[in-house]
Amino acid sequence: MPAIAIIGAQWGDEGKGKATDLLGHRVDYVVKFNGGNNAGHTVVVGDQKYALHLLPSGILTPGCTPVIGNGVVVDVDVLFEEIDGLEARGVDTSKLRVSASAHVIADYNRSLDKVTERFLGKRRIGTTGRGIGPTYADKMNRIGIRIQDLFDEKILTAKVEGALELKNQLLAKVYNRRAVTVEEAVESLLVHADRLAPMVCDTGLLLNQALDRDETVLLEAGQATLLDVDHGTYPFVTSSSATAGGACTGSGIPPMRLDQVIGIVKAYTTRVGEGPFPTELFDEHGEHLRSVGAEFGTTTGRPRRCGWYDAVIARYAARVNGVTDFVLTKLDVLTGLEQVPVCVAYEVDGVRHDEMPVNQTDFHHAVPVYENLPGWTEDISGARSFDDLPPAAQAYVEAVEEMSGARISAVGVGPDRAATVVRHELI
Image 1 (cartoon, rainbow, N blue to C red):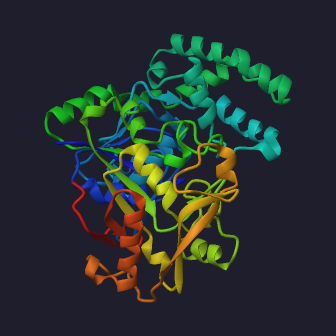
Image 2: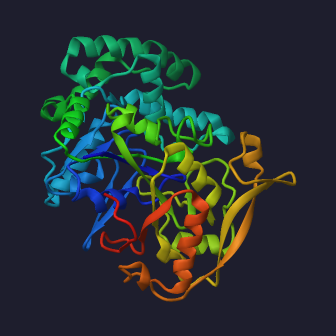
């Protein structure tokens, strides 16, 4: 059986959690391969709503093994807060596995993240302040703390000493903050070590052995393509690889075992934080999308910036990831609009761009070229087949599919797990 990647095709918040959960009952492993607790997935099961931040969505599916891969940065305090919260609601979390090579978010990296963002002022990136970026920076600088280090206090202490040599200089002399002692940093990192130990393993080996047994592995991205550190709208991006390529490096599964890439794309576009956003709306239509779509961050609670569907970035995401299937979410939010504009190209200084501009300056000044599609007023939340949708909604899906570079295999028509129209089987 295949390894399948689910990736966000916009700037995040497309509904990857629901899509992962929708497929969860048909897969054996669900793997989070990048990011940390800086993004959230909201999953609705019946009358129950679950907000997941660090845990893979497969944690909610009985029989499925959820895995936190080596490409993730782990705030261990948050991990156990989430586990305790789910267990209090009757969710079994005993099958969770955590990579021994995943990096750990230390208290000093949370502190640096917050003070650095404040220091940047108008040049801020718009981070969540949860220490994600500094932890990935430590990883690349080879001074990071890994999960496996928590089980050898001597090694852990030596690594913390090395990390704090520079960080304390920054905290005390640049940001006028109190220096952190090695002892307090080590103590805070060891708090959950004993409880964590039974969950830790070589997850790359675990997943490759599962594929050898013809089991199905679903790889779930945090963030999205336009936030990818290499392929996103840099520097207004996350610190990890949120694309299909990152699914391999962040899980230990080789590229030739990845058979399918499912791109999640919202029927309109949203973004949280700073950075260019060509189709952003500042009028009543933007407020409509925000209020009807409940566009507030799962992790931060921040109101999301809202705009019309952007087929240019959808085509870009399809190309960068090798998308085989799109899942179009939140189509129901567009109900009641007389017309629904779709961005088909950009204009920059009088020149039309049908693909993403090559440089950031052009993208920042891109003016969307719209095609207006007819809207619909019928309630579509009960639709379970494509024929159940009103003709204008069907036409919207078909038009967006034609523009976006891959087939639309499923359409979300409401927040519930069952509120999905399946056009083509995804597995």
